[in-house]
Length: 422
Image 1 (tube, rainbow, N blue to C red):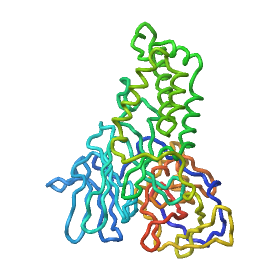
Image 2 (image 1 turned 45 degrees about the horizontal axis):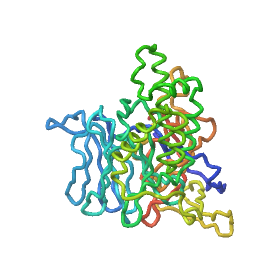
Image 3 (image 1 turned 30 degrees about the vertical axis):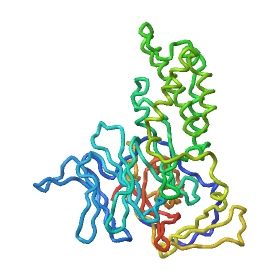
Image 4 (image 1 turned 90 degrees about the horizontal axis):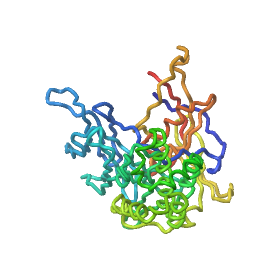
């Protein structure tokens, strides 16, 4: 449970580089409704209602399935009639269609590793604008807090079963960032975020063991003749192979093809290089790239980095305020903007208290200060007082209808009190 905290306006100004931004490359997230449990409903500013919840049987009982629908003027549009999982990634956000949209992602069954991502306009009557497939999750967010919204996903369908390896064996499937740009064209902009991939590469390289890597380089690459090895040795070779693939994918999907092939040549068996390189390119061509309209050539244009968003706190009237300052830190150019609405939760869960926690602490309220971007995602979070790592980790999955200013979604700072139980 949450409650907005009232208090005086906080006049502390923090430059964005010092905020603790949450990671955006992760595993598939929890959903609003799964297996017939969970619900969400909200009215948009256009008068269209978004509803997600359990599928009702004719008897009135809830089925073990979920559905989503849009309602307006006594009319309904059924989006997901009987999915195992239905989630609302965003609502009331402009993804580049010059109008507010809602994005629904679904899984047909619990064993399906992939999600279906559908974007609908919230104008009357609503209509489908775009469908994306092939990812194990989709999460739209303003990655750099610069007003540009990217849809992050993994190219999961392309690598599921690659070299006989199931998707769940990969800790770092190839990540992608997509953005709708001019004329609603979907562009692969992954190359604009090299540092996001570099941290992943550093983690993987630190996990590689030199001896195990040497053993893998002396194999045939396919690991087709390892039956004479012990189970532990086979697992170690496969683990090394997976890490090498993940490193190569991280370079390749972030637009650094030369570095990708250099890393592959350094770590893969020489006799198998041509085969595996062709297999990697073929898998990528059959993945999400089939659905995009183009790709960014590299770093984001300089004009997108000219302004940095700075955020204040919440007033007695629970107004959400946004401060903007130029990238030189010139306070003479600072303006204060007060949003018309505060963010509303779409998905907001905290982990259960750990076993053995004293009874007096079970209902302890944790106060958090959050920066919520214009896509309704938690861009940064900090607990007030005692740290709560589990809560901070859980916030990476929280989703909100963003604050609005003059009918447009804006980034905002919000202080909330969060308790485990009501």
